[in-house]
Length: 490
Image (spheres, rainbow, N blue to C red):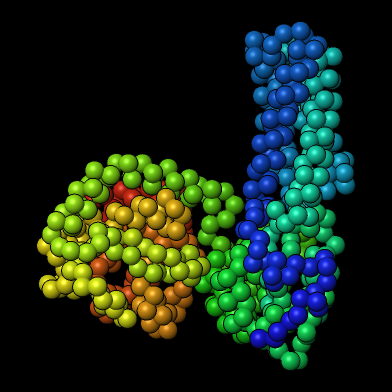
């Protein structure tokens, strides 16, 4: 990997040292931003209706049903017409003045439809003309005003790296140079390139478009493991499709969106159009990050709320099990072990100790087997009933684990099986869980054959690629019936 000095970096570009000191921030998602603005448009329309009704009519809108119905109908029209006219696209939201005519047409169409409904139902004479015109004009002015304020807030936060998407690019050719020029012209600068990588070290670089070349594909993977990255853009020649297939299969294991700047090789992948926070760039998304946008918030709330409630509910059992372990054998109540978690980051997992403690630390992890002499009497019971896993609720609360996710394996097992099973590390694209899809499907306990581990990894990968709140709740319910007592647990 090339060693790039910090003095070689341009001021406008983020340095490697700066990345390590930055938090993850709040990367802007085009889907999330679109939904937020659609809700805000309806909210400010309602505010305009309430205020103009109070000024013109002189009473509370909510006490006047016919006017309230008109405002609600206008909100419905605005929402659907706005969707059709794409006033909620990322490029429109971040260029409010340029798209002012489009917004004016949407507002005008909304109120023309409202008037048409009034005439067709023969109720137009029941409404004040002054209120109707005031409502329409104030609605347009309020929506334009708040969108301008929102634009300046987003621009301010983007300039300070609070609301930016961190991007790395693989490829150092002309495609990359064109991509960088277009990204540099963006205002606000919501897409920030934090690294360029290319396998042709020595033939390309040391900089590409003013950005330092940081290494090859292996260096890119290490970089994404160490730093938070939202998007990986593969910018290779269009005739390098076999190489792109190989690259994408490697990048599938990383917790980031993967895009191709190509419209030919993309036909060989199941794909969807890349999110429009990349504007008009000719890209397709070939790998989706399982948890992004609102999904991150939903998953976090699920873990904090349900995890906290479960900790309170099981606290008497936690105390009783800890007491039983302490009374039966010497040693600590809790067993702590280093495991790989989200994005291959090492964390410390908590379990109730179920084996005799001799003070020795084994260099190699040996899975528990049936009639294992190392397991205590209390240990047999808590392993069979999964009570030994309860302390992991503390891992859930401190954010290193989730209630539902792939079970974390010992570090040496990870290294062993990752060399034997393709796509093994894809299970680390989400946080590990106390229970998971593989566990409720019967793949729990000892994995004494490669086939069993492959089956477990396949179930874990399916969970990662198909995550939803309902899927998590389904697994939790199944765990209650099949996960606590299992013949494979010993």
